[in-house]
Amino acid sequence: MSKVLMIGAGGVATVAAHKIVENKEVFSELVIASRTLSRCEELVAKIQGQGVKVSARQVDADNVPELVALIRELKPDLVMNLALPYQDLHIMDACLETKTDYLDTANYEPEDTAHFEYKWQWAYQDRFKEAGITALLGSGFDPGVCSVFCAYALKHHFDEIHTIDILDCNGGDHGYPFATNFNPEINIREVSANGRYWENDEWVETKPMEIKREYHFEEVGKKDMYLLYHEEEESLIQTMPGLKRIRFFMTFGESYLTHLRCLENVGMTSIEPIDFEGQQIVPLQFLKAVLPDPASLGPRTKGKTNIGCIFTGIKDGKEKSYRLFNICDHQEAYRETGAQAVSYTTGVPAMIGASMLVQGLWKKPGVYTVEHFDPDPFMADLNRFGLPWQEDLTPTLVP
Ligand code: NDP
Image (cartoon, rainbow, N blue to C red):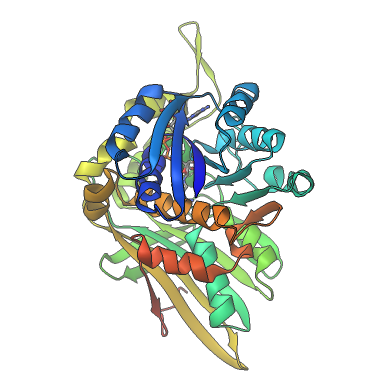
């Protein structure tokens, strides 16, 4: 039975906490620690009394000595980082110092450059190996489940995968003209960056939203989707042998894009600090403060997400295509956990990754993304804990 220290008490942490107390065979104790103690206490109040011991603590995860002291006092088997990508390296430092396993759902991004890649976290490889501890990176949906889908497709359906298209469709409607489904700062930084995909051994860069395609998503309908760069592409080009192309598409509605363009044009999405009446402010952080809190979207959001991967490649000398995906209903997710499907589809795999790690099924000293491990027990738990997957043996391909 395992004890987990969870950092963060936002949307994703809310779902992961609900799922940890549901998985009593694996977890015996959960401590939720975040910058704002009251949010941790509110979450504890919602999930206590279900057989797993839960409690709340305050911590600033950017303060490594403070975090080290908390880990030393609590002695958890695992630290789950469900705060923001800016905290990744600080929490990894604290895990190294206390020899504690680590898990996150998004790769490190320096606060001042709006640029994310794995190199900063992969630089911990030798130190984690020497310390005998595991870092499991990107155990959300994308990255996370989609990367496990890749490992599963390679294990059971292909001898070689040649192309992967990751399609992330959110058909949810929250009724606001403009709001983001998770942390606005992280979300807007991601979608306003240049696009990028990998083909024939090199990265091809695009302007933001330059490549648009249409796709029919089951239980959602026809949607426009746009090519973005996404972090799992960086690890999958290394872990999928024979891969010739990988792309990532996300759906956006016309209203979202029009608002985003306007906000960009007036400088509101910039991360360069400006002087405002004698005070330094970052426009994007100010924008975050005036936008609806993603946590408040839960009760209003209706519709479904449909996220997954389309593969083409070779099996037994023949060409083949295959698709794996999950459909998640915003209202059902909200009824169960008080958070909408974007948090749900991230929080459930965060719990499953934690379960794989603490049970020793995915334990391997070093720093690894999820596709490095046996996908089968993770795939079984997706069905068990609320994210059942479906497969299509004759998928429509994306041109
Ligand atoms: P929220 O903004 O809702 O929550 C973030 C939480 O982190 C808050 O509780 C916040 O505390 C806490 N926090 C921030 N800074 C610190 C700090 N220095 N010390 C301690 N706690 C801190 O974010 P989400 O729940 O939506 O997202 C969580 C993570 O999940 C993000 O990294 C996001 O990128 C990732 N994600 C991954 C996805 C995937 O599919 N892989 C999809 C969606 C999200 P406070 O309340 O005090 O601000």
